[in-house]
Length: 296
Image (cartoon, rainbow, N blue to C red):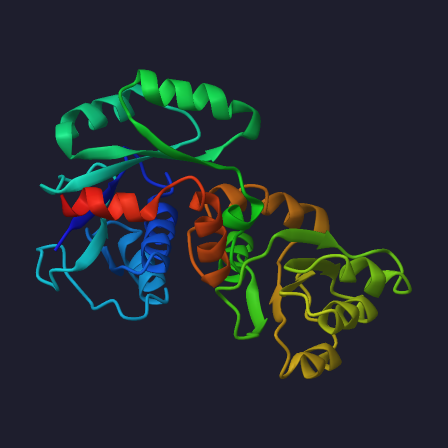
């Protein structure tokens, strides 16, 4: 049973994103694949839950000890800097190449299949590819910056704001690509909100008309600002809808500022991100050839 470990020198390099993209690509090429999250770091539990939700129909569960079907590829992600398995490996580098990345690649020797760089600024693609080659990292593919892959979930937005959950729209893992500030007046609200799909709408607690417009345009999340509860009619209207309603303790400007860093720390989860990740690697990696290298 071929094992492929996904490794990096630091957390949040994009190992989960790469692991899922590779698993989806190999599965699409007709191969049996399973995903395993090893380790006991802070991200291990959430990552394992994300892996369990990925549809790899026909792939049996497996463990990193090699106990599984002989024709199944097992992709194992471990904690950053953890002890390496005696298996083929792909190194994940985020944005730029560092000396630690080159040392990790050298320590793998012949087990190194190559490197995938994530969150690469588009105008730095050629220079990062050159740095990977010069650093002995054997570049396989570069994944450029992608707002969908960086998008935080509703749950992460709520945590970043210290917000109170007023209504759970059954979409805590749904991602938000745009933060939309509600307009001053209600008349242009629906056309304005309708321009954005995966959105979180920020509106003051006393703007009931804007709250309703956000719900009616299927906002992923409505963030009510100012620390005071909205009209009961808003929560009545939210019942049965997909929009999650959060109550932020601060006014709109401070709420917006509190969200500034959430895009840089959001974790991989959900089908939307799985599709975006695979789209980044398709056409850049020959998955059948990769499977053959693993089998050899």
